[in-house]
Length: 77
Picture 1: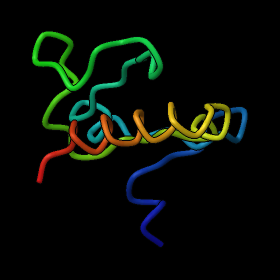
Picture 2: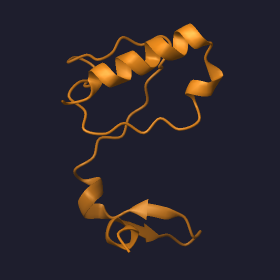
Picture 3: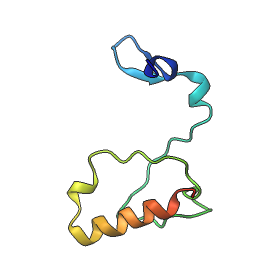
């Protein structure tokens, strides 16, 4: 199973990214409603993958569309 190649279980039985992969990943926080992105200065451009879990549903429709558009624009083609 592919998950075993990229994740390990820690002492609390939580899945953690294997160290080799973690070195290739940048983890960061972003205020989706207020921060300016995509941005070279904020390193929020040319992303390969964005995880955005359980957050869009809390925005009103117009703000959700704006956030989704900006996240899309931050991705590499």
